[in-house]
Image (cartoon, rainbow, N blue to C red):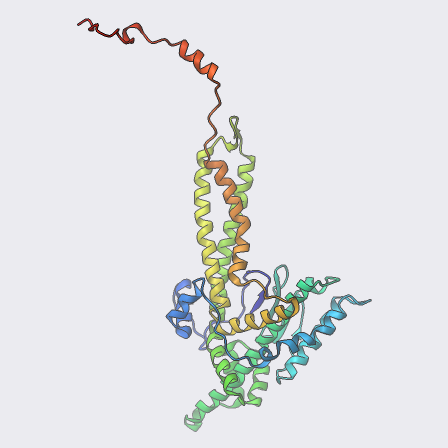
Length: 401
């Protein structure tokens, strides 16, 4: 549950399935089967295709008043570059704005601890339900000013992660009520007390047990739409760790290929070149073979990375909902929607494709044939006259037998 400007993967620290077990399958099969279990075969097919889109449900909670949430950030933006403002004052302002919105939904306060986890670079924020904290990039908080683009990205990130807090709390309310109802159908000696139920729900969804206890006390007084959403989220949350693991695996493989591309680039630049073709290495055949193998591996690992990211962002209903909600905040601030995932992936790949195109042109384009003027050609022909025996005989004379 992390929010990035562009696709990037980090390790998630929670365990996998609700029952505390993970099937003994290969990684790729595990992810697909997990998604098939809760979404079905057709949904999984859409996830790995370009037509994949999240399922839109009726807005509830924070998603029902995106404008109000963004309005609550107005004071944060106004005071961002005020005299004496620093990362600490901005953190406090964000903390207040976030929890003012969550309090209206009876969601417990979320601590805001910048720089605690994996934020930085392109990762602007994460939410950790097991610790009940939100992490916003400390580098972002240190920026002296924010233009409209950065404001839009911050609003997107903050609402995205706040939506996760709302999701987990609502799911905990629903599951605690269901667990209690299920226990009532058991024999009295087999029933669990409230702390045991809270601990079971906490382990199932990787959530702070104290916050689960608060959710348990509130009960599941939910509208039909709220319960339907919570039910869908409860089915996808246990697969979050699996999706993150596959995303990290795919990202690691692709980043390793990118490193090899940079190594190839350095080797090609330093290799001795042919005097008649300044761009072609003397060992041209060896570099051609390396190029073909590297290009093939890059294509495969990038496709796998894109598919894993789609499975994470669009295949898990709670992630798809948070991304959609955050993007509405982005559009509210910036006046336009952010780029979709396919566009981001295309932009991420573009500079690498330009490198490969340049190297292909240099390594596989034959050198131009040397120019020879007509005078030189005639001189060469005159140096090699046709032998007498091959000259054509005058007409009417037969060759000597």
